[in-house]
Length: 132
Length: 70
Image 1 (cartoon, helix red, strand yellow):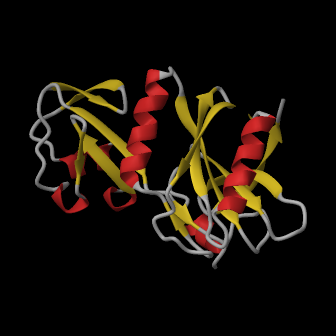
Image 2: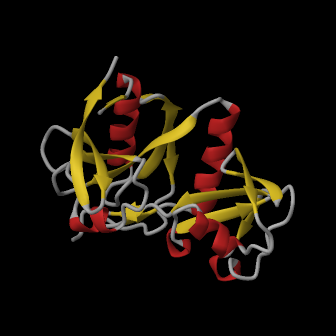
């Protein structure tokens, strides 16, 4: 399984993550067939450095815009300001959507790290991220 | 039978049917999703009381949350 995230979108996600420190940042990625076309930063309604929740109304707004573009929501993302780019127990516990790709950007090291995962039945498997 | 649209896809359902029953019939758990009915956001505590009708457009999205805490 792979997901293609254009470099400019990877950079935008990382910029958002730094911009929302000390809190976690989050958002959605829309596209088709595993290829991301657009990034939508969303509000972390928890406003927390250790947790995030999406605003459902913002999720629906993105859903409508994606449909208007002929796309789908294919991934979500959030940042880990001080821990590695892998799903935490909390991420896995709350990963209700078996079809989503979960992108995590870690700011724990000097250089940010972005990885993607599929999470099904309590198990996370890394998804290869390609870019252009 | 009634024709509705669920997440932009046509679906036939048997009435009467609550929003809770529709969500469960589509392999989702009501507590894990947010819902819109005909473009209007529906509070989770109303899912049981919402009766699905012919022509309804329903969207459901999974709650998204998590974080580095564990």
